[in-house]
Structures are given as structure tokens and as C-alpha cells.
Length: 172
Image 1 (cartoon, one colour):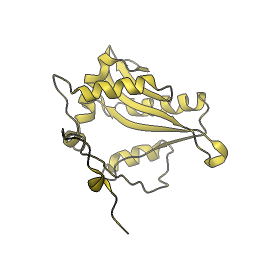
Image 2 (cartoon, rainbow, N blue to C red):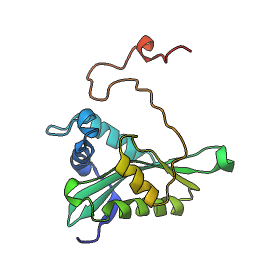
Image 3 (cartoon, one colour):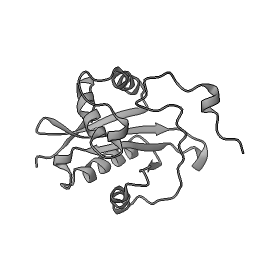
């Protein structure tokens, strides 16, 4: 395998990124790849590209986009005002898995976070992704928190966002 090139994604990369996001059991239930590409993906890409604290990174091998991840910098007061780098949506194209590309991608993102002054790198992985958990642990990440999500709308649903009554968290 030719050495990967890591670079900022462009709008032309979005279809390949969405295809990778959809190419697993969880992503298949929430993503909508294909032509024409849902305009919400392009709108999201434009928001990411316009935000100096968000970076959509792709791995390219022999001219093809074969990996992606999002790196977001979060300012906070905890840890004496430490900036955190959040890694999300890490995907490697199926034909390129098992070749060290994911490890190279994470190392690239960690080094970029360090170079930009972050004091911590964090990520989350769905609890059902046991192999991913072992992968991240092999790179030095440690499970330290329990995460929670509260969906305000179903990602693939075309209806308007939930009403206030639907979105209210359970009482108690």
C-alpha cells in the first residue's frame, strides 16, 4: 500500500465520506448515501469547513479517499482551561481495513491536536463496537467515562424537528 496522505476534506470528497459512514451495521441504519446526495450532507460540510475549530480529515491512497475522521477543538475551563481535541466519525474503507491505515489516521490526528495546543484528545465509540474499543486501547486511549445521547430528531427522518413536548427529557 502506498503511504496515505492526510488532508482537509473538500466538497468533492463528501460522497466518499458518506459512503464510508454508511458502510457498517450502525451507519447503514442512519446514513443515506447515493445519488443524488442528500443536501444536508453538503450543508453540514459547509458548516464544518467554515468553523476554524472543526477539521474534516481524509486519508487518500493512490488518489482515492479511503479514510475519514472529524477533529474538533473544544475550549473549556476544566483541567485549568485545557483545550480538548475530540475525534469523531473515524472510518476506513472496507477494502483498506487491517493494513494499519486506522492507526496511522489516529496518530496523525493526535499529532495535529498536539501541534495545535490541545492538552487532551478524547473520543467515543459506540458500546457495540468491541473491536473499535480494543483498537483505541491499543493506541493508549483509556475508557474513562460513560456517554449519553439524547436525540432531538431521527437523523434519516425528513419531518421537521421534534416539538418541544417530544424533545423534553423524561421527568424525574
